[in-house]
Image 1 (spheres, protein in one colour):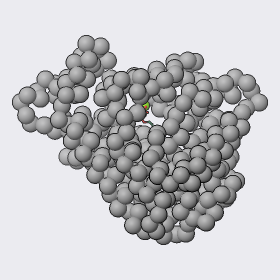
Image 2 (cartoon, protein in one colour):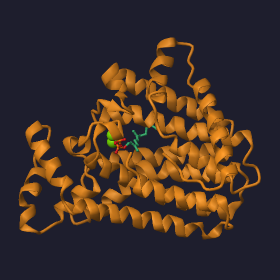
Image 3 (tube, helix red, strand yellow):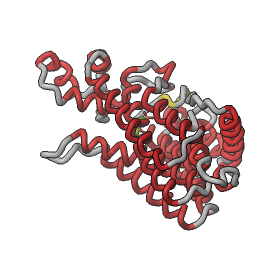
Image 4 (cartoon, protein in one colour):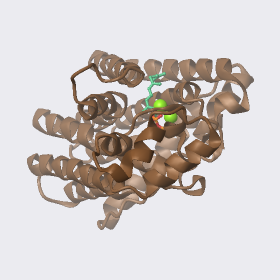
Length: 327
Ligand code: FPP
Ligand code: MG
Ligand code: MG
């Protein structure tokens, strides 16, 4: 995730702090059992944008204790929680590719993937304890929201309710929550104070929502060389995403075939390819992109609580990059 930070001093500091996070992460996922270490390092070292740790570090720059060790610990907590959730997610989504590598369930099997996710989540919990009781409470609440979002994704919107609203609740839970926590942890352990903590938590929630919605657009639009994942996985698994929900809401007769396909089992390769092709060309893609840009704009508007300067500019750029990302 290339973040255009104009301030060279800030960019250099963040880069150096990210190296510290990386070293700490490698240490934290070491197990006495070599097999566990190998399985846990598999996705960690396959790649990843370190988007959440970067947000922790950037949010911490709003305070006067950005250099504290707790900031690095908090960055590790959110990345380990995220990584844990990916091991589980790939089992649920039956995904075979992650970060350009075989998913853990494909490389080993579902048992290894689930237990490695549990291992990483335990490591993350242990680290959270070092940050004190309030962080443990935030972490527990975040985990609740992650799980609730993920469960909600498996059930359709209740009869008579708006499926797009239901979907946005799913997204806020499964992704907004942890990204909100990343920004909140950064502000808290960077010593920013209550007002900025609140603003950055709300900012993170919106940026996180935009991040997931962009991810879902990329799942349709991009090739695996860019995303490191198999295109159309959500479609194949019948996981609803914003472009699909927008296309389904269309009453244009020209959309009849796409809507018919979206109601079928798309594990069939030919049907899947046809649906993916129609969806890629559909105006719902640009509508979804516009929706994401709006969320990023709302996120940036919340930064009014912060003083003008390079940190605020970088947080604005961060929201823009999320909305327009291509990988
Ligand atoms: C990726 O979404 C998945 C998430 C954002 C959250 C998944 C949450 C859980 C599995 C519950 C929490 C579990 C633990 C151990 C913390 P996606 O499938 O839409 O994205 P993808 O395209 O990257 O697969
Ligand atoms: Mg998935
Ligand atoms: Mg999923």
